[in-house]
Amino acid sequence: MQLLDNYRSIIAIICIFLLIQVLSLCMAPYYHIKTFEDPTSLLNAIYFVIIMVFATVIILLLSKYNMKRVIYALLIFSIFLTLYIAIDAFLLGFIAKSTVSIFLHAISIMIAIFLTVILFKFKRWYIIDFVGIILAVTIGTLFGISLIPIVSIVLLLLLAIYDYISVYKTKHMITLADDLIDYNLPLLLVIPKDKNFSMADYKLKENRNKNAKKDRKALIIGLGDLIIPTILIVSSNVYVGLLPSIGAIIGGVIGLFFLLRDINNSKPKAGLPFLNGGVILGFLITLFLISIIQ
Image: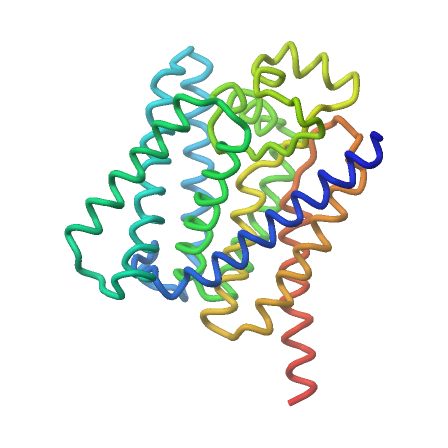
């Protein structure tokens, strides 16, 4: 039974990964906001990493001085804003076919508020995962359309190195993940192994430490592990073509499989070296094969 539960968890997370990629590719043409003015500048990758490290340090410092309400407020606002961008792009792109509609903007705000309130009030893993998927699609797509593939590759390599260092060397990413779980927000996706799983099982660090010695009740994967590879997948489709993007997706799935192959190991793992490495290799190999055929 445990083996079956493990396979289900692996299949579930691979399906979520694929869903995020498909939705991101579909939504990319409807996003008109770019996070960087010049998609070709390699400095964008450096700026991204600096901002990410800075945000991590701020959250860790606020957590250290027990300012959890401030962290929670910042995270809730960020989630609301991202939801608004996602819903607005969907409504204007698929329904109105127009970039100007005050009525639809208002609807987007109301839906974003509704989802944020639901997320705040009902601490359910499936609500967290649902909103998390929307966030992953939105953020991955926004950065994907804002960076050409070579810049995206540099970014993914830098973040893979950073992820490795922060998990295995400084270990501050493990501390951050422990803090974020207690907020019950879609910053980590939860894949239960048991249908009776509750977020209360993971709410306290003491419970998580106790569960780590036994069989883990859920598979936890950082939202960033799903967002970052999406950047190159979207970028390759926007600036090169669909085939290299599909190659990157296949590489990402293979990387994800290697990441999850030792699923019963309770020790935290750095996901980006596997996932980023997979999508980069998949993208480059596909480009090489296309060049040979042509």
